Image 1 (cartoon, rainbow, N blue to C red):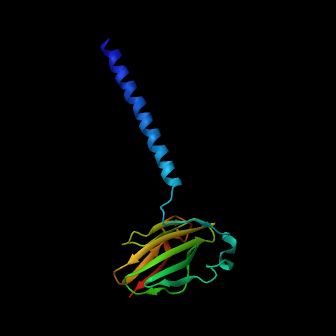
Image 2: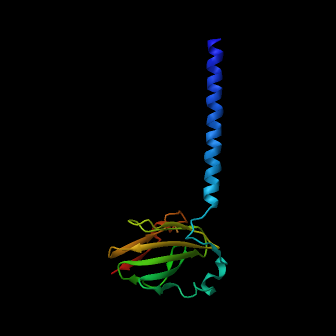
Image 3: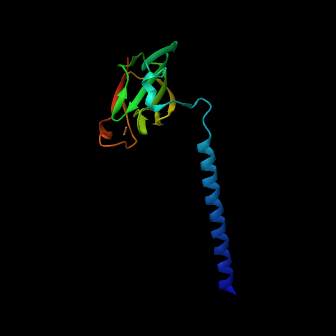
Length: 156
Ligand code: CUA
């Protein structure tokens, strides 16, 4: 009798764990399908990136007082854009796409961290308060040159 009850308890625990697991997976999938209100996704033909505005003119575009758009192209193995220099306190709206495979876009020391997916324009905004030279690195394995894939942005 005693063992039987114990088995029931374990069964109950097992079933509730299953529900917890399903709930976590369900909520996770739901959250991934949602996007933060400041982010928009646009599609772009990865083979025609360099002929498609605004990526035909990569680099900075001033859109306001201390506010810039930065159009950047990630490829194996680098980022295509002219030298970028902005004053401290500026907000940059990064808009990045890839011409080949999935790359990463991370700026250590900041919250900037996103995936760069071919066929999509990936967005991330950040306000740079501290002057310095910031490194932009790829944090998604993308091939033999992955570890050399980086560029910089200068905050004056
Ligand atoms: Cu690009 Cu790793």
